[in-house]
Image (cartoon, rainbow, N blue to C red; front, side):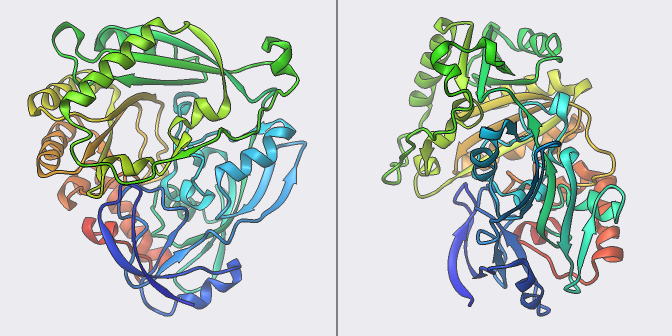
Length: 447
């Protein structure tokens, strides 16, 4: 049964009434493809309009069954609506954890494949697609194709990062990694400026996990100051006796909800500047090394359900870009200066070191270098600033993350993804058949 409802991405902008349908089994999906365009949607954690189609948005939350598990290898077969939360709660007590995880556990397997998500370990583990054995894909003709590096390899690569435009993933086989505990040993390095932070990342490329909080409002000698966090899975012998008694710590934190939409004036330059100051000072005083449970380390924002309401009813826009290694430093300097000159204050700003991207995935986001993610309360001034950041990004040879995008222009997309965009369009015409799968984003970008 189809239901007309207003939906949006996680950033709550744009909003649109879409005809939605929620199949109970993968076998029901071909019958929903009646010639009208459609797109799949998981738990709605893509920030923009990539999982929105007014004609038909297929909700996959009910496709949430774990089908097989091989304890000898950590291989799991599951339906596309299974979330990272489901995987962790099921398999961490058995000594396995996702090889790559995004910044929220409320992301489905289908969404992770569509975005080819990356985590804090991209520099050593690659993206999610590097740990997928195969997936089943329903195409425009209603037929299901098994895709893997050996079977339908071009369709496999195009689907990873293809934002659902090659078809609908119904089930997938992935490989989890073995871990001894659910605890992470986090080490914090205080970097007083951008150059020190980059040097810190480059000197710790052997760290399993790395990410940094960046103070975008610091200027002068402190421009680009960061708290750089490195992480390693703790071994059992590294735990204290009380933690060793519950080495996998699968209990959820008691997540709180934001009960209402915050007033638009809550996040302003003064409040964000104060937050940045106290956050940086607290980071300087914190222990250099400490143990964190998996939930706190990987998913800090998930502790506050509906945290997107902090930005009020207008919503927000996230700007996540990747800069090539050779131009990362200069590009980051220009971006930080542009942000400071604008007078705007991103509430959230993080950066990570990325490893090499996958050449056989035309729309996969990561390229070797640095990624910068910024959250701005939605306003005309913020959109103008992001246009300026686009200019810097393109001059540096970078690109924007489709899973976070809600406002990129077709020209910016074509210039930044270049040959990948062309190869993807050619494959869609050749392999996926008539243009059945589409979203507001794909129409905006001319895909």
